[in-house]
Amino acid sequence: MSVVANLHGVRMVGGYLKHPGGTKNALHTLMLLVACEIWNERNCRTFQQKKLSTTSLLVKIKEEAKT
Image (tube, rainbow, N blue to C red; front, side, top):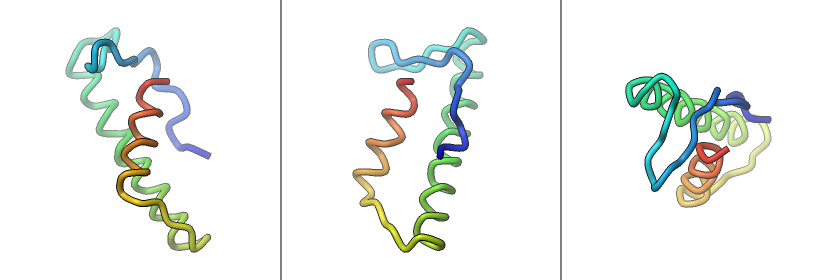
């Protein structure tokens, strides 16, 4: 389960994050998303002995940012 389930209107448009509150809020939301996904990966590695490759983790973060 992802810690960041809803990004409150953040979406990808032309490869850039768009947020109703502006670019600064979008950047903060992206930083939170990346931190949460890295933390989730750390927990999976520590407690479930499951590992994603770096590429797979980046793809997962990009997909989560699009939703």
